[in-house]
Amino acid sequence: MSFSRWWTETTAALSDRLPLPLVALLLVLATVLVAAGWYTFPAWIPRRLPRLRRRRRPAPPEATPQPVVPAPREPELPAAAYVSLADRLAAEGRYAEAVRERLRAMVRELAARRVVQPQPGMTVVELVRAATDSRPQVGPPLGAAGAVFSEIWYGQRPASVEHDHRMREHAAELDRVLTGHPEDGPRA
Image (cartoon, rainbow, N blue to C red; front, side):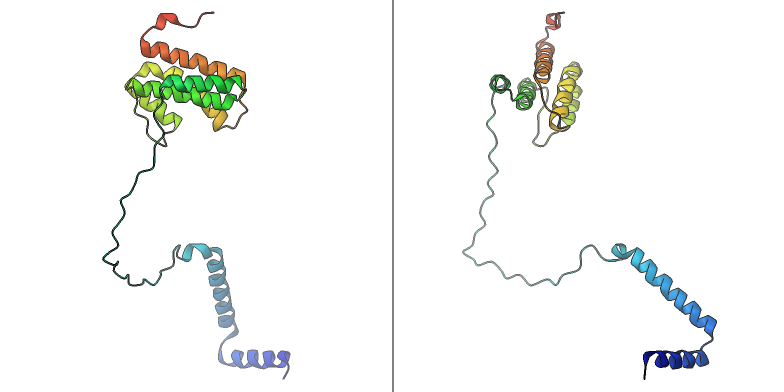
């Protein structure tokens, strides 16, 4: 029996039992359901399929848990060490790294004077906000230095001698604010 003959006989037998409009409606509904399922496919699949859990065997008695050793932290250097490193990097023409080290020197000076307590993973914006909450007058130089740093490191702009010069000015201004000598401002 050929496919066309089988199809003809099957549809004729189906039309004898069900009215044609009902069959058409059922086909349309089936098509709509398949299309809706296809369209929303990822939404109705669970993100994480359940897994069978195995029973855990108890640890042997001789196995003792090892103490957790914290990761070693960088040694705390004085701000002058960061400034000298920044000067060396700027002399080598590595201005982006010099800008970073100058900002580190500024942060170290703020931490030494207990203006801010830097935390690992703290962003420049969070640092500026914490420092200005403690001493509002450090906001302008520190914010400007943070903007230079962000422009280079986050904005991926090439650093130049001008960026290093601006960071030196912002560091000097921050030092004047922290030491309380505003009359030593920049001269024209």
